[in-house]
Length: 107
Image (cartoon, rainbow, N blue to C red; front, top):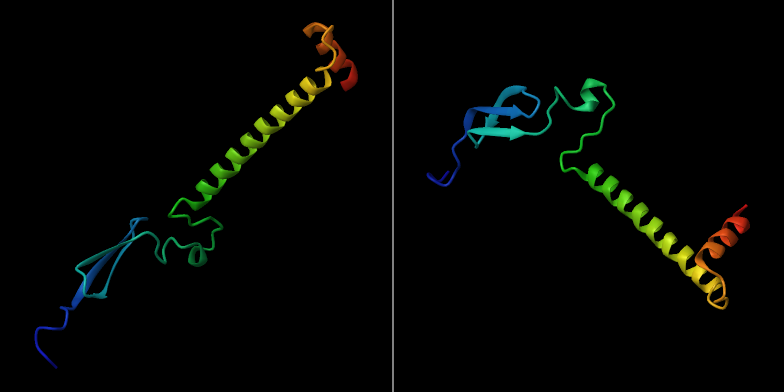
């Protein structure tokens, strides 16, 4: 083997998990930091929970909330356009009379 081209192997590389668990392994790095390990992984612990390190679930939920808000705003605009279209020909009605007419139709 050529000398000087192979990386140095650390026989006691400390691996630290986000849950606080630590263990040693063999690696070319002096220390490793991981987000999930065998002590906290749902498969090994038997717990049902989501492992979401990149916040993808939160991102999806935010998108769903924004989509609902946009849909409600669009529906509100559609209903206001319908009311304007309905009463565009009748200029002799006041706003109060229009609202009373809408309430009667809704019941």
